[in-house]
Length: 510
Image (cartoon, rainbow, N blue to C red; front, side, top):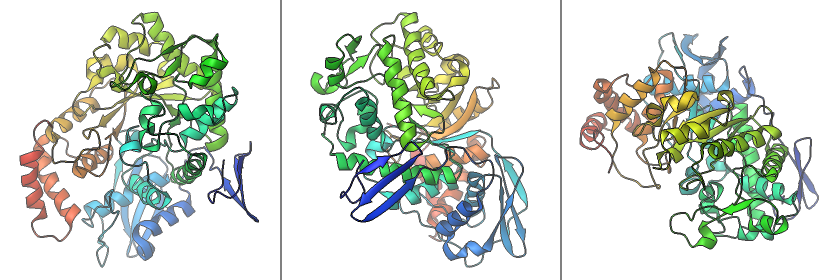
């Protein structure tokens, strides 16, 4: 690693400390403990309140509840009481209060609030989570939107996540430092990696095995700078009680690996999206090859040295490319290899897999079932990535018994425009929540790019605490209230948004 100043090296210690020397100064970056808080960390909550409401933080009190996932509001001695057990619970209670009682919303572009001159007294009431997990982000979000985000932006973004109850965020910054450190254990140098790692804006598709070196190479100081940014992000997420999702090995390797280990069983993935083969066909290890387990274990170990672990990992093996075989045993061995390599490095590891691959025509139900059969039910969770429109869980017997998170994707390619089928979203979410088979575990938003159609995602996240419409008949009133919250004192904003809803948000997106 390099120091943030670029004037000295950084070294990761086994103790979880990264030591950076910059001239005469020595800076210590200590990894936050990877244990999820089970109670409010008072200093973290105090700091959160100061960041969100500024010097009005003295108008709030915190009351610790016994059970996580329950949030409450109250009033005591002229102050608003925010109730919860974890930092995320308290933050969710504040988001609820600001929206329902102060008629204001902090959204994801300017992160501004319009606070009343005097805080209104809320009713004494509580809400219970209707979904254990509130998930955030698509792998592609880190290319279309967040690739250039710095710590100043991330601080506000993480507070926004907390206000909306997100407790399971994808944390995909600094993955390339993990990759470099992992393959260094196999005598692959940083120079060797220059023909492998893609440029910053294209890293999501590199990480999913769709392309290599496109837009690259990346300089070493950028890689190490991203690693330091990841440490800041993870520390803040963890102190608020979030469980960040980190990366895992999905089988894709640099060409230099094949040359150094010619006896390894490798093949080239199918060319993705008509890219020239040199860029769009990446070398991959066959899942049955012993090196697969060695690399996968090393990946988790090196990542844990750098960033700690919360024991949930994301990787994609067949994103928009098909497996080399439709044989059921082969498909099962492919998924089993990912999970077992992950668990070799972390015995508590859980694979959080994007279910996007199953939209491909290759994946008939028998193949989906065979692929998922390679991993025990308690070691995997599926992100039903575009369930607001194409609920795969409903077509696959709830992913053949695997737990899943229901998501709204809606926004593709970072594109902007007024469009969505919100009634369909509400109907499909209600169907998943009432399925009754105990596989529904969470609600999330997985847009490929942010800063568009905020109403759609605000509604989705609100559903985790029962703050969204229970059926489509309630939507016009909810949208009217959203317009008022979003635009404050602007005359007629609610009426305008209700009309906009009828015009643009009640039919399938183009």
